[in-house]
Every structure is written in structure tokens, then in C-alpha cells.
Image (tube, rainbow, N blue to C red; front, side, top):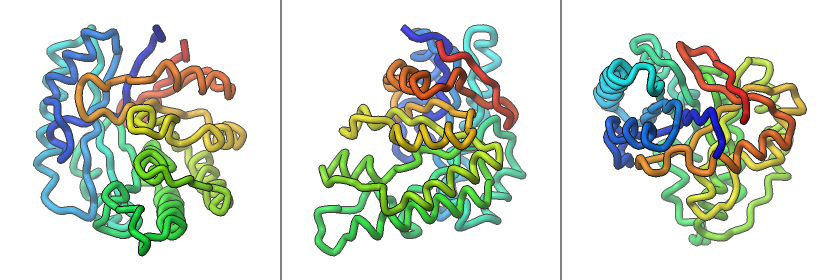
Length: 268
């Protein structure tokens, strides 16, 4: 079993698709040797009326941290999606609330439509257009920079291949991928290694190995580990595989965030 297990991407019932209460997340992590969990409930900037849910999560996490001090670290996070399209909404939220960690994500190829609900068997849906829009949006988000680490970079493949078994070729988007990674490195931003692909039919991490290698080659050293768990039993799932991938590339450390600053942990 790997040590230093810290899961920086976990959802509670305050997320629209979450299944476990924050207390259940904490209890499962304690029972399974996980040293820390960051609860990163969804905030989709193109969807109103989510602030109360985030506030509730932050209150609950603070109470759990106090109750379990010395046993586990529970940190306050958020998965901030489409922030580049609604910069005032994103900035306002970040000014009002006290987060340890902000995951930046792109879920939509077009505002209001999550890539996960697209029917890629529909002849009217063009995979190339979805990928082009996604990678361009990820670049714009990296350029804006209202986050600490980029979540699941390569998200559409989770569905295009993982669900529909349509082959995905990232080669046409190599330039924008490269520029996005360069912006992350230059801006001191982290890159998440998301392990949900192993549970959802993709059979690999998000981002894929080639993107992780390129981030490292460009000088990137801040990687976080995220299960993207929506139920307690998926916390830290397949982290042993992800850690081996990272050490194989050359990474010696991964990070979690405290008060918006990376804390480096040895990959062991």
C-alpha cells in the first residue's frame, strides 16, 4: 500500500451528483489510511444559486477538521468550472470565501451543456468540434488563472472513449495543449492527476501519460492526486497506479494545498 495518500478532488452531497455526506467521506478516509481529503464540491459558474451549498460544505469541513485534529486533514476546496467565461462570478466567489484549494475545470464545450451528457453517437455531434472547443477553453482558463490546479485535463475522452468507445486523437490539438501546459508552468499552477478514468471505462488517468510527461518536460512539478470521488468508497481509488506513473516520469513529490499554497509530499 502506498503512503501519503491525500485526495484533492472529492465531492459531497452538496454537489448535484454527490452521494456521500462530508462526515461519511471523513469516516471512510479515516478507516482506510487516507491522511487527507479536500472536499471540492462543484461550482459551475454558468449555473446560479450554488453559493449556499458551498458555504455549507465549508462549515461542515471546518467542524470535521476540528473534531479529528491529529488524525486526518480535511481541507476546504472547490471545483470552479467555466470561471474563464464568467470571471466576475468566479472572482466574487473567491473573494467572499476562504478556500484551501481551487480546482479549475472545464466541463462544457458550449456554455450550459456538460460534455458528459452529449450523445456522441448522434451523427450531428462532431467529436473534433467538441475537442477543439474544450482545449481552447482550457487554454483560456489557464490564461485567466483563477485557480490553483487544472482538473482532469482531457476530460472529454472520459466519455468519447470511456463511454462510447469512439477513438480519440489529441494530435490535432497538440499546439494548444502545449501552450496550456506552458501557461500552467509559468503561472506556478498545478496539474491534477485524476484517477476516475479507471472506474469509468477509460482505463487510464486524466490527463493521459503523454500530457503528464510534457508538463514535466516543461518544468512542471506541482501535481495533485484526485479520485473525483462522488461516493466515499472511491476516495483515493487507484492512487497506487497514479503514483507509479508519476515516479516513472520522474516526479518525486505530489502536492496538496493549504491556504492556496502547495504542500509537497513524497511519492512513497
